[in-house]
Amino acid sequence: MTHTIKIITGAILVLGLLAVVPFAASAEDSARLILHRGDTGHVFTVEVADTPEARASGLMFRKELAEDAGMLFIYPGKQKISMWMKNTLISLDMLFLDRDGTILHISERTTPLSTQVISSRFRVKAVLEVVAGTVARLGLRAGDRVEHNRLAPGR
Image 1: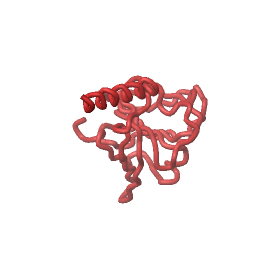
Image 2: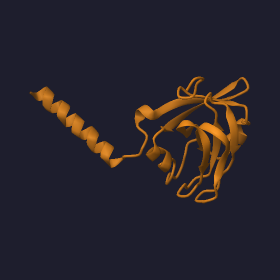
Image 3: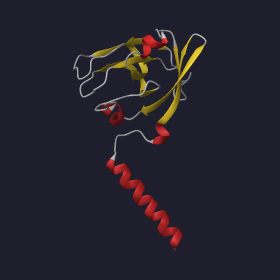
Image 4: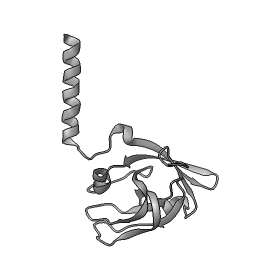
C-alpha cells in the first residue's frame, strides 16, 4: 500500500509541475547540438520547440542566454517561416535550416522587442536561435551544418 501511495503522490507532483509551466521545454527536450564550421564542431545545449505552443512562446521574456545554449524550433514540414522579436528581451542570431541541418539563411543580431518580420527566405524545416554574436564568433555562413538528432536525412 505504501508503494502505491508513493507512486500516486509522485504522479500528482509531476502533474502539478506541468500545470505551473505549461509551455516550457522539458528536460527530455533539451539536447546536444553541434554547429559545424568546416572541420570544427561547436557543442551547444538546446531546448526543442516542436509544438505550436512551444514555438509561439520561444525565448520570449528571457533575460539571458548562455553562449553555448539555444532553442531549436522544429516544424512539421518544410515551409517559409516568419518570426519577430516582440516580447524577446535579448538579441539573437537565427539560423534557418534544411531537413539535414544545412544552414540556408542567417539573420544576425536581431533587435529585441521589435515587430519587424524576420523571414527564412526559403522553405525550411527548423530554426536555431542562439545568442547574438554567435554567428560572427564562430564564422558561420550559409552552407555550414547543424547536427542534431531531430535533423537528419529522411526526416
